[in-house]
Image (cartoon, rainbow, N blue to C red):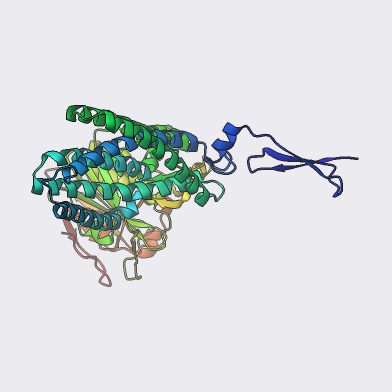
Length: 520
């Protein structure tokens, strides 16, 4: 009985059929592939479309169109540079032109090193932003090139140097961001092959651009026409590049995408997919670390830093709030309609995603904080707010189920720094302060608010309240109480919160073994 056996490619397409598979009677029939399709396959990754993400083809289409426009404009810019260097001018010195070229190349290479050192860590998390920014650098350099023929020697030198620096920035940003995008597109470990096919695509597009650009250069000589044509080409170039990066649906959570996802959960109790977030995220506008309150009336910014960045920064005119959890230290500064947050992650804290969730949550409730009084608000919500640890774990599990990559750290755009706590007195373990006492408070005559007491503790140089209390315009007395009495209370409702230095404090210890230092 005869049977058929097939060779298939990674996409599942049959490439050859075998009948009568005995060695003596084996017959093979290759599958016919149309010439146009065979040529197309030479420029696409093996196994396409199953070996790449769904956003690969639209990105490459727009990327090829922008590269075509850039190839034509680069020829016009290069002609202007050659004219500026004296090509065709018998009065120009070859030595002077060589010095101009050497000076520009030297400074541009130094700029490459400095930019890679300063911004290299930020390019991968913000690859869409830097991919678009690279082409802005490139087009700006080309417009500077157009100025060189009309300038005297020293201004020309400055323009050549500036254009070279912009091209260097373009090279670093474009190459690094393309590498990150390629890693996103590759699904089957085919990153090297994908890059090779992309190089083939760019070669063909560049050749076509050079052919068309050669005709354009011969036909267009008038300076005004050149400037007008350059503006059109730059507009097409940037528009196509913008459409290209807009098509990309990154699965990693950088600061902007994490903020969009977390705010949607806070507002609608819904989890967005990478496809939905790609439609909302900004390419060049605000979003990278920018936060806003529920109504949008109060805006702020959050970034990761060192312990000194959090505890040692005291800008004039800002109200300050310091928080500490088992995973991080956080500082919040507020003035008028603006707030600013800094987070220092502790050693062993793991992913910075929970800290960013808390930052987004604190920012989201800034309206209610100002409505009810900042101190009272933070005493009732900080440091973990109304969202429990179980709820946050549920959010992260839902994010993973929606297709988000939670393993990669795309939130920190600088070298990740962690704070090592060496176990001295006042450390916080398992989320609870270690030295309990009771804080009693009474009203100031000018502002009658009431009196009472609440559990408290001292940790890390701060006073922390274990239960909310109205403490604005209040004079305090600190009384140490038996630790067992504190711990016998219902601990499920405890919310450790900072007692701010802005309040007037009077300490009256009833026991001598330990006295918390006064806050100033």
